[in-house]
Image (cartoon, rainbow, N blue to C red):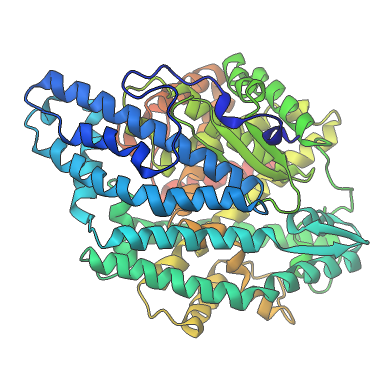
Amino acid sequence: MDFLYQHNMNTNTILSRQYIPQSLVIKTWQDIEPFYQQLKSAELASFTQLQNWLAQRSELETMLQEEMGWRYIRMTCDTQNKNYETDFNYFVTDIEPHCASFTNDLNQMFLACPYHGDLDSRYANFIRTVKSQVAIFRPENIPLKATLQQKEQQYGAIAAAMTVDVDGKTLTLQQAAVYLKDNDRTKRELVYKTIANRRLADADTLQKLFTELVNLRQQIAANAGFTNYRDYAFEAMCRFDYTANDCFNFHNSIAKCVMPLCNVLDANRKSQLKVESYKPWDTEVDAQGLSTLKPFSNGEQMLDKSIACFDDIDPMLGNCLRQLKTLQRVDLDSRIGKAPGGYNYPLYETNVPFIFMNASGLLRDLVTMVHEGGHAIHSVVSSDLPYVEMKSFPSEVAELASMSMELISMEHWHVFFDNKDDLKRARREHLEDVLTVLPWIAAVDKFQHLIYTNENNENVRLKLWNETFNAFSSSVINWQDCERFKTFIWQKQLHIFEVPFYYIEYGMAQLGAIAMWRNYKLQPAETIQQYVAALQLGYTKSISQIYEAAGVRFDFSESYINELMKFVQDELNAL
């Protein structure tokens, strides 16, 4: 399915604007500047004036968020279209810097207004965020951030250009990865090494790019008075509810509670495969020699089945996805020239998000679809919140929405699998993935802590990665003759390049999702009510309060993670 190119993406119905002309087309900064000037010159001499000012500001920021969104969506859907790249880069370099400067002025106006403390409790996180933004704002960082954002997008262009030839066909790396489930071990090894060597061909380029990114980030942090970018990032990301030490507790708990289970899984697979040496190309094939699961044939069928699956859970959830299909807000199939990865991009003005992914027909694509579908539900059910920042929830909350839907929907995957044995296999494979991804998340997050608190040297960086990866990788896998692949395997993680420190949220939310799935198996109707109620809060409560509303805990303790892992292990044993 490729809806993206079948319509003009800006022609969808826009919510009625009160302050900005409906017909406004943004070509240059001058098109927007008068609205910022109007906000900057406004008088905030009463609570009513403050409320009206916030409404106008929210409308402007909502419009700009959607404008930026479409430019990003177009560029990632077709990285070979230079016009899309130019449009995105223009927004980043010629519009956003001006917006950033005015935003700081408006934030200071807001805090100086004596009536901001009279706003209701839903604004508490917004006020905390504004205080944080004002504290770290530095004018000299505006051009640095524009440069940084442009350089970050270079990773996507480099990754999108990576292709390999397999069986006479030119494939994206995502498409080629299908062969890693092939029962022919020789074929798996060949394809694994082909993919790995293709990544290595750009390893030096990506190393140089990453060095530039780290230097820019460290400079931005230093300008704001921080000793390293990690500490700056925590403040910039408004991580009010946990600290770096909590992240370290997460890393340690995963190493103690999850790694032993992963080693057992790999030991069992090695035994079933009857191989003397268990290699990295043996980790995805079915251990019993069964053919690859095929839950759908193309993106359109995947979307229709996902809608049916969500309908089976609750018709309201199915209707959320149905809106995306009606408005053609999806681009699902993998193809050459398309950026890697997947995302749900919230669009705050039209209030219907866009789902982007690179499906190639595998079970992991089904998981990605229901994951992004969870994000889409979140975007839709929180769309009525009165201020734009209330709909901009932190990732720890956003990923709870998506990862919970992965596991809850698993109880309804009969929509994708008619055969009961295939359904059981799919559930088992996903649960095994849930376990094995947690150490990878811990490794990626710990690596980033080390990167930004040590010397930015390529040799030091690789040493730190190898030490970290060894602590969080299976003791069963034999990496002999693949050491160089292992040393650079971190480069496949988009987040390290484009959104630093945005990754541990997946692990935190995965724990919450396991707890929510456990609740769903006991009380399905009540759990869905709690799920929706928590998502409707947007970011009007603290993270822990939102988790509590969902009926789960925001907890990284060893005892709690042990409890959840025992539940997962019991479910695996039942399969």
